[in-house]
Image (cartoon, rainbow, N blue to C red; front, side, top):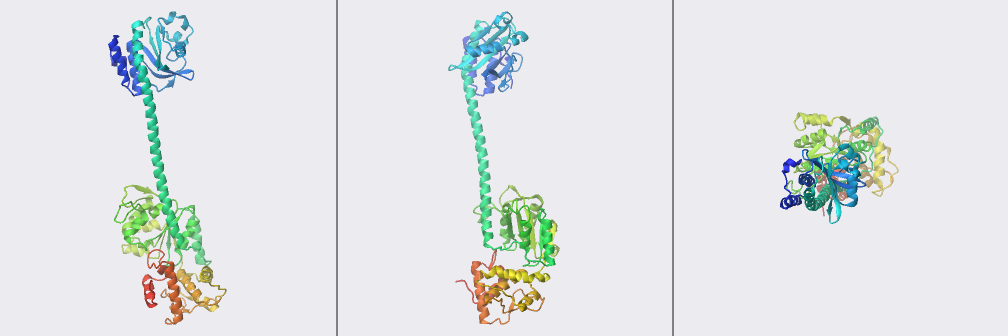
Length: 539
C-alpha cells in the first residue's frame, strides 16, 4: 500500500495536533507501514515536497523510504543509496557525523554546497536533514527538500522535532518487533524442518526395524547356496535366461513344479541385478490366510481392523529399492490381484486404513506351479495381471528332465547335511546312484534332498545306504517314497527320529512359513498321518 500527503490531509502546526500525529505513529508495529506513515507525516508537517528516510551503514547510506507530496511513498527494503542519488551527500555525511540538524534556506547561495554534485544537478532550494535519536543512539536520518527558498522556517522545524520525538521510539520498537518476528519465523521454520526430519527418521527407523525383523526371520531358514546346482542343458538354458534378464528391471515369472528350485532362481536373478544391495523380500501367497495377505503385502495402520494394535510396514515397503519374490502367485486371492496390478503398473498402493498413497520402486519376481491360463479360463486369475507378470517367463525344469544333474545334487546334499548329522560319507554305491538317476522324482529337488538326509541317518558307515524302493524307473508316483518293509521296526524308528528332529527344528509348526511338512517334502495331511502311525505327539 502507498501513502501520499493527500491520504493524510493537512496537519495543523499547533502543539496538540502535532502531538496527536506523533502519537499515532507509536501505535504502528509493522516496520514497513510505520516507515510509510512516518515519512508522509514528516512531509506534511514540514511542508516538504519530497524526502527520504535513511540509515548510515558501512560508510554509506541505506534507503528505507522515499517519496513526495504527489508521489507514492515507497519502502524499497533497505537498498544501498547510490552516491548523490536522492539526497545531497555533503549534508548526509555532516548530519551523520555531528548528530545535529542541518537546515539550508537557499542551496543556490550556500557555499557549503557549491561542490555537491547532487545539489548542482537537482537544484533544490530548501533542505532539512535531521537525525532520529533514541536513547542517545542514532537510528535513522530524515532528509526533506523543497523547491522554494526558506521553506523550513522555525515553526516547521519545531513540528519536525515533535514528530521525530515520537517517531524515534516507534521506529526502534518496530525494528525490534520486526527482528523478533523474523526470529520467530525462523524458529518456526526450523521447528517445521526438525519435525519433518524427525518424521523421516521415524519412518526410516520403522522401515529398518521391519527389515531387521524380516532378515532375522529369513536367516532362520537356511539358504546355504544361492546358485542353482546343475550343469545339464536344461539348467544351462535357465541360467542363460537369468543372465539375460538380471541386469534389467523387467518382471520375471518363474514356472515349474513344486520343489524344482524356483526360489533359488529368483535369488540368482536378484543377486546379479543392480538391486543386489537391497533386500530380496519373499512372500508365500499360499501360506497366508486370505484375511492377512493384504496386510502382509501392503501393511496397515494402527486400528485399521480388530487386532491391529500398531502400524505395520508391508512387504512392498520393505522391498523398496530391492526385489519382492511372490511365491505361489497363482494362489493370490482374486480381490488382491487388482491391487497387485496397480503396484506393478503405477508403483503405488495404500496401507489398510490409510488414505495416503505410498510410492515404491520394487522389482517383482513371481513364481507358480499352477497353470495360470487354466486359472484365467475358470475365472480365478486376472488375464491383465497374467500378461503383466509374464514379461520374461522362465521355465524351471523338473528333476526328471535334468537327470545329468542328479549325481551332482546327491553329492551336494551329502556335503550339506553330513556334518550336522555327525556323518562322513565318501561313497555312494553305483546301484544306488543308478536308482536315483532313473527315478521319476515327483517331488523334484526337494524330494531328493529329503531322501538323501534320511539316507544319511540310516547309513552306519562311510557308504551311503538307503533301505527304500524308489519305484519304477522314470515313474512319477506319490512324492512320499515307499519303504520295502513299512512295518520294519528299524526303519520306523529311524523315520520317527527324523520326523521328530524336523518337528523340533520347526518348533512343531505344521503349516505356515517354515513348517515341518514343507521341510520333509510332505503335505501337512500326510505328515499328520505319519505322526499318528508312528505315535508322535508333542510332549
